[in-house]
Every structure is written in structure tokens, then in C-alpha cells.
Image (cartoon, rainbow, N blue to C red; front, top):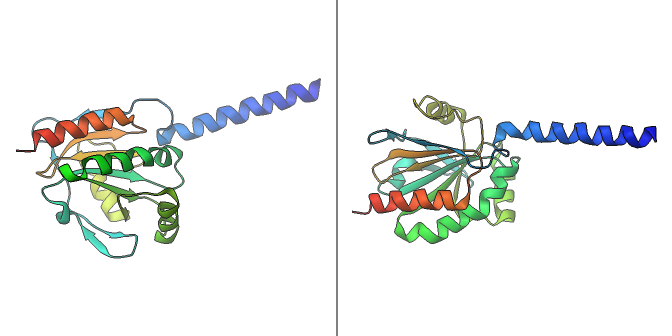
Length: 186
């Protein structure tokens, strides 16, 4: 009997540890914190990051597009769980001018390349670099990029319109993307 109680106590403690250890990464909490920026929004800082083939990609290449920028990592369960939603949004709205860009916070493109292929990721993925992450962290009014997934929705003029911290419901993302696409369609 004592062994059974001990095993249950260990299971409860382990469950609580697991539950609270993932909280900083946005896995718990349901709907994310959404930040509506005042005025025209804040400008997306220019950046150049490597794609998974090691080629440089400049943010200027997406000028005139609505961008959903997703900071993520292969080791992050909610990040992985959002991939089908991001794939669906990419497919549904790419002809309307949406570009979904994942910025991996992993170390080493080879592991990310294998993961992306295995997971069937359809959208662009780039490798995050400390200097670029630090530039994003200095944007006033935005959450620092240490709680992932973190998504930024940028309009066609390069202004950050929305921020999503933590796991985001598909419908919430789609509603916001649709509104920004319509707003900047003219």
C-alpha cells in the first residue's frame, strides 16, 4: 500500500513539474496575449537571415506583402502543434499576398531542415541569429522573444499590426490576417 501511494505521489509531482515547466513557452493558457498597436504600428526592423539551405534572405524581399512572422523551435511542443495551422493559412492566403515566415531559434540548420521536411512545413523558414533577435527585442511595446511561439502580423507597409504570444487558435489568427489583408488590399 505504501509503495502504491509513493508511486502516485511521484506521478503527481512529475505531472505538476511537466505542467509548469512548459508554461513559459506558452503551452498553457489558451488564447494568447494579443497586442493591438496604436496608430500606424511599429516598423518591422530590416533583417537578413539564412534560409535552411544557408542562402541569405532579406526582409526587403517581402515588401508589399502581409507577413506572418513566427518565432519557433523544433523542441517547443506548441510550436510544433501550430505547424498545420500555419500551413493552412499559408496555402489559403498566399494568393492574396500573405507570406508565412518561420524563424527557428534552434541551433543548426541541418536539424531544422530534417524536422521541416518530416513535418511537411510548406512555408519559408529562416534561422534566427542573436543580433536579429536582439533587434526585435528592442522594439518598444512588443514582448521579448523568449516565450515562444511568438507571432507578428505585419501589413503591406511593413508595420507590425498584431503580436501573438503563446499558442494561438487557428480562427483568431485567420480573423486577424483576413482583416489586415482587407485593410491593406487597396
